[in-house]
Length: 204
Image (cartoon, rainbow, N blue to C red; front, top):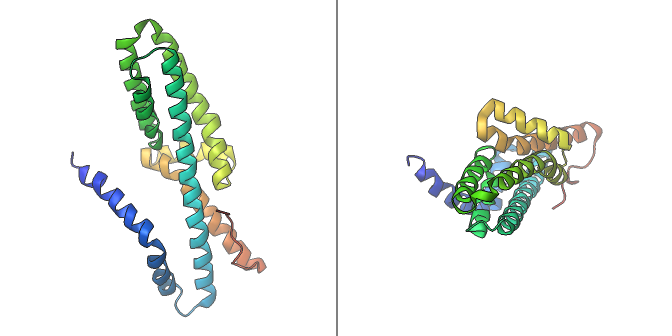
């Protein structure tokens, strides 16, 4: 309950950042690069790539949510579990929250299945385990690596390391943090070999 204000505040702030992001970015970059044209050009190119990167990362998350929704909805409907689409609609968005989200979805689905389709509970349990393994170690790394240009193995190791370092927040932020560091590294290397900063690392 004490975090409710943040649940309300974050979408509001996100809306204004999305709406006014470009106009807010320009004066900040000019201030940071004041008196140093080369540094300002570097900051602008990095900001441009990070903008595209975060968009690609969010598209990857939405894709994973859609996969979870379809998989849950189809299987639970075949198993004749009551409220199959509602359960899928709950489990899908929970993919946004690493570790905790899938666990909450697992508990909810098992509770409802235990009450409405107890004779199929073992099959539903097997589906949840297999889907989780498939989603976490095959689908998610491949989709994330394609969108943010990181190797699938690096995505898996990064999520595991982020979870160990900072829990759920670390797991959620690990991929964009690694991709951001990669963008900064590439731009710094480009400066050393004199590649124009106008060339983007990511394409929208």
